[in-house]
Length: 139
Image (tube, rainbow, N blue to C red; front, side, top):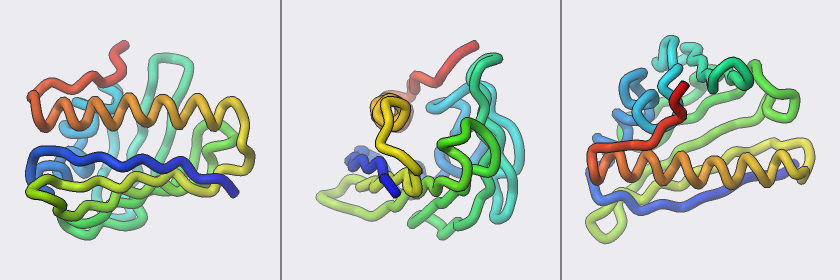
């Protein structure tokens, strides 16, 4: 299995990062505006990118201000059963975000594309929290 990893330092509190990862409002301001569902423990969140792509995630883990983990239960074949993890801690007065998208079946061009896309959306998260203006996918 293959894993996408990214590391970010965000100049805000863990509480603010956690809120952006665990509320529909927060998620829709940095990933995609078409976000719906229940972002609580064992809830299901749906993310749509226009009419072409959608992802349905089950919230597997929520540890307040420390960790969020989703399991993809519907979407592109390579995403099914992948695990997305956001781990938070403090480093040099910033929030350190360790991101993993694990259990990819292949090291394909699609894997590389998604790694690149995640970097852009994680930068959108940073911009939302530091500049109050994320860059989510818009329809």
